[in-house]
Length: 320
Image 1 (cartoon, one colour):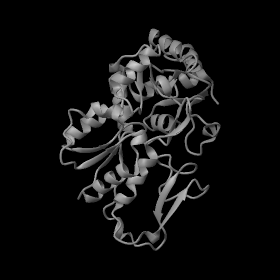
Image 2 (spheres, rainbow, N blue to C red):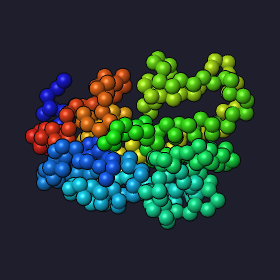
Image 3 (cartoon, rainbow, N blue to C red):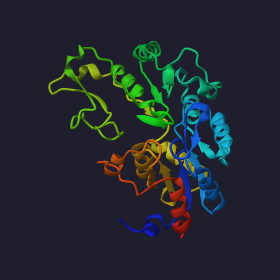
Image 4 (cartoon, helix red, strand yellow):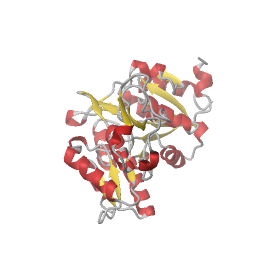
């Protein structure tokens, strides 16, 4: 692997994931990861531009910033790129009225959005709100729409809290994508693969849903595809969406090659950033798993033990 000097040369700005990089959420708000508070302070005292880029969808941006400040981080609301505000802009621009399957903690972000007579579904990490009743209501809404639109705030599979790994919005998003295809024939032509090594559908891998933890439904050979005419795929607002990263870069006034992403998610943070032309480091905190360093499709520009180590390297080699 090339030297750190070569890998980090020319970096002028840093995008920081929040959960799993700055802190682990949990009871009482969560716990800062060792050295992260000081690391953020050192970054902001340097010549590097800093922005926080998160898929947090259980808290409003203001509540998230309030929590981070209570934990000791120097961060303001204007420095955070989050999916809920971005989704609201999209809804207004396209005249969409959402049925919201979201956590109560983020509903305030949608107060200025018309939710009467919904013509789309917005799904986020609803936590305990992912009941059968709520999921089925969203499913029925999509099936009843002539042109169904499903918008998901991120598509992560899981994240880490202080008590352990937690399911994220991704599995629930996938569950709503499949029935909304509008099957007109019995589903005997479908196979389901759940975490079965080597079993993957057509085009699998582009969103990190192949291999471990993947739910993949796809037609067998000879299956009549006419029933899939009303197919729907969720529009992801948040990482790893290229538009999400580009909006953060625009706020920083930087080109992709001038910025680096630091995150704990090999697909959403690292892979998403690299597809936009950025460099990316993965920290061995948060949701990181040792197998991430052997991911078949995504390889980080570097792996570091934590944010503090990443900042040490950046301050030594970046912007040179």
